[in-house]
Amino acid sequence: MAIHLPEAEGVHLARTLESGQAFRWRWERGASGRGAVVGVIGGRVLRILQDERGLWLISPPTDAARRRLRTYLGLLAGPGRLSDVEAALARDPALSRVLPHTRGIAVLAQDPWEVLISFIISANNNIPKIRQSIEQLARSLGEPIGKGRHAFPTPERLAAAPARTLAACLLGYRAPYVRAAARLVVDGRLDLRALRRRPVDEARETLLSVPGVGDKVADCTLLFGLGQTAAFPVDVWVKRAVERLYFRGRARTAGQIRAFAQARFGPISGYAQQHLFAYARAYLGPRGARSGPVRPGLWMTEPPRRAGPTPTD
DNA sequence: GGGCAGGTGTAAT
DNA sequence: ATTACACCTGCC
Image 1 (cartoon, helix red, strand yellow):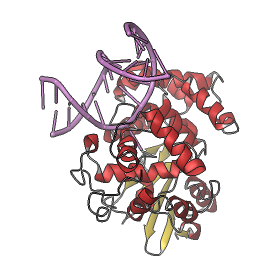
Image 2 (cartoon, rainbow, N blue to C red):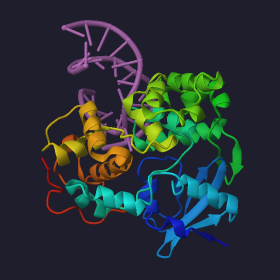
Image 3 (cartoon, chains in turn blue, brown, purple):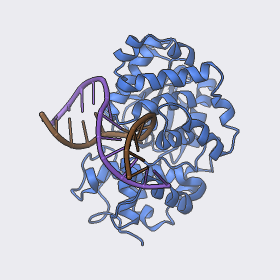
Image 4 (cartoon, chains in turn green, blue, orange):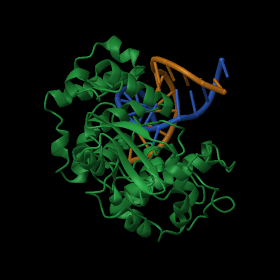
């Protein structure tokens, strides 16, 4: 029998799992949020569902899995209830117009090792291929865990993988980065669990020393893997969104965008980033064109009024 | 086919 | 400190 998670009220499962934080979830019937979704958390296969009555853990129906899921959804740690975070964000005029279309995006608390490698792979790549590479990595190097799924590869397995195996995962020029990162962990020179206890700036500097990790990947690791909800990863989409919503469409550097967001959103910058990313993906085309929805997400409703939120300054 | 895709490393100002 | 440029690979 499925287990209900009343504490997940306010979480929009489809928006959360399709927000580009995690890459290993698969919908069983379309991506609309109807139907169950299957993924891997902590080396276990979980099947979950959200309907009008709430969020359900279908399998395995155990208390251990329930705790695992609750942690994963960020319902334990974090800056507070999702609705409180969103209420705070809604005090921002631009975000107040975005939020009705993006509400319910949780910031996941994932394994920092998996996040680090996944986002090294994400660099200059596209999402379908990122997913494919990660899944292939799991199939070829990860422990089988049933239902045709595999755990994310351990640092040891990844560090020891032959070059041809990584090539077969279509990592391309990122393969050496992935292997080097794995080696750092295996050698004990990169302790991701210890990073969780370090000040955010120090953790960031450490991550930046890892091959293949720049500002964006470091911030993704901080936000999705190390519980640093103040982190604000700036990718092309978020850059477009912020330029459009806050700088009248004028170009800004990624550094300027990041500094702006930190000052404006503080400890919940990461949540703001998720909403801005979702907004941009759904409504902003390449180079911030006003051509309307480019990829109308199935979970999106109608676009924001007219051409979208207006600049505030 | 040149450009793009959730950027980063490197060499050059 | 800032700015070009190349880059695996698949897709348009």
